Image: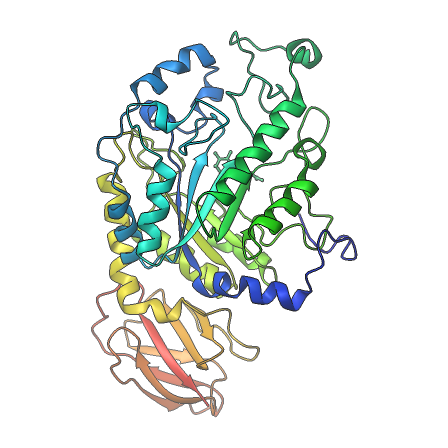
Length: 435
Ligand code: JFZ
């Protein structure tokens, strides 16, 4: 999707300068936490399990009846997010399964009607706000529980669990407008009952025959309402409004590898990533990313002018499991020492070549260039190609210890002299003060 297709088509009347100002905090903060939590945590094998396994709404009811997150303590979540250096957090207020973590007046399929007896969204908002973390709501446009949500190509489940390509027959008697109204009503609730909301992450469109897009969601009308209720809010790009210049605040490359991120330079973007492949808690998944892979995603995002939102899928009891906690702890250790190379940073200015085995981030305000040393040179030599005359001072970022450098005989390159001992960080960072 690209916003440039028809730049003159607009929904509101915000100027590009006003948009940049509205989005400034978001582009500076760079690192957020995604939280996918719902009844699916009990099945513990992906948030799409109801659809993947064609579980009927009747059979799924037992997960509503059994839901009892006795360890839910969002203050703990918020502390872990904060420690990891995450500046904003986006919670699934309702995922595709349709279960609402918030106390919606439009449904009984909600947390307050379960043994939890609490508005989980309210507590999330209070806890994260108290830690100074910006608040984001994910809300699924798709709803596998609402009786008026029509079955389509991507959501072929019939209420009896069998598949039927005869959509007209299957959807007979459903009132789409009733669902659309329900969805608009709930988004309105979310944007009026919880104070200032910083991010809205609506998910997702799949336009085309037997799909759903802007006309189905009433996206134009919806975005107008959103902007009216929360003028400062930042909204994702999954409403299928990419033909409008102002129909999306940021693009959302999902689960892509670091090398695919370079193509997003110049856009406003956030890559969303899981620890293990699934968004919802997945007990038996053993493909967890390493600390290095997570760091690579964060550094490479910033090195290409984007954000990273890293997902946690809490257990059905309401906790981050030990694998998630360990992963967050490792980020926290690195960010404690190196976050200056992340916040307020973007790609390096023109003329700064990327030294071998490194990635560059840059803070335009402080004019500091950060060299992320992915492979530490055994001989301690790090060549900064064509940096001669461009540097004032060099130090490690983690401890502000000075680093010596000298001009290479070719008169163009600079040789940075690193100590034998690699600092105790998976990827150490050199801070260069530029001339
Ligand atoms: C969606 C959800 O279906 C998923 O469960 C999760 O919440 C994720 C963050 O978002 O998945 C998508 C949506 C869009 C694309 C891919 C996966 N896409 O546009 O490629």
